[in-house]
Length: 205
Length: 294
Image (cartoon, rainbow over all chains, first blue to last red; front, side, top):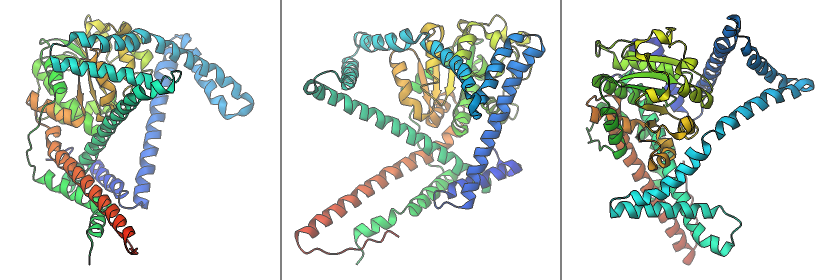
């Protein structure tokens, strides 16, 4: 019956109290719900700080102590990021920012064209040929039609009369997609709520 | 005289709705309805793919996210399934620094509990590696050279000393990669780009929020299958024969969803009644109504 059996641990009972305080925010905001907000933000910030320091130690400082001096470069670049807080020297943050942006762009471009562009397009179109059943074929043709109409919806250089008719179908496809996304989000939040209500009940009962 | 409109508005007050929901969930948690669980095609496909791996295969499980309530369900049933089939795995992590702590807790509290799977040995049947920052860059380097990213495991043991890691150093050495993630699509894309998109043996275990983001990749075969949220975990539990937290939660989830549908229906009836009464009153004598919401 019990999830983590919070009755057996003080930490578990504290967790039950914190969950009750959080759920109380649904009825009315109170010092208890605000307390939980502050506690969660503070613990997240603390955890992020510790993990960040741990990463600096294990990926920069320890290799330097072992003789791998190349890691001085990222350590220095990371240190330069703190210069943004003092305006006369805030220009120094441009160098590490440039390195980060350049690296991210380079990594982002890697394999982008093939895996995220060409394969997606060929997969959508070739899916029509690969279908064995009539229903599957109709389904795939429908998908291709929706893809094309959605793309046309975002092409603003076509004459409006032509774009409005085909683009309307694309707009409905976008609305349906957002509806599906919203349903998934609702289901996720719902299951989270249910878990914590069950956690409280199995902790108290 | 109490009008239907006022009764409905009184029943739909936020406090009343919250109280009904919590009461309903509490009752069903104590007295479960044992509603049947219908297994979706995607979960079935994911299960069959994992079940079809030969015993002794080694896979990589990337623990990149999911909230605890989702993660505990999916991770515990997946681990039990892998252990029962004799499939070995390595836990890796490129996105969520805290997830390996959750992973360790799941093993301790939900998998290797009560002497279950006592014959499985850490280092031979499974291994855990810690969080490595960088996501895109880390995955790219890991795929080419495992040991350059993970020199030691989660407990500090050198990777070369782990029997499970013998002759395993590149992505292609692993029979499958299972990614447990919350933040699609930005966590999907680095995996799709790895090795130029040539490695196609992925199974994603995602939150319901990201289900729609994964579907295009499944459609064209870049991702083989997905398991979605606690519901998918419950379905996986049914298929694998290891009932757990997922199955416990589906009853209250189903009833809660039905309640939402009923409330949406009531709200729409209330809105229709209000509009009809306003239209009716505008045709004849205008009647002043004070609608008290509280």
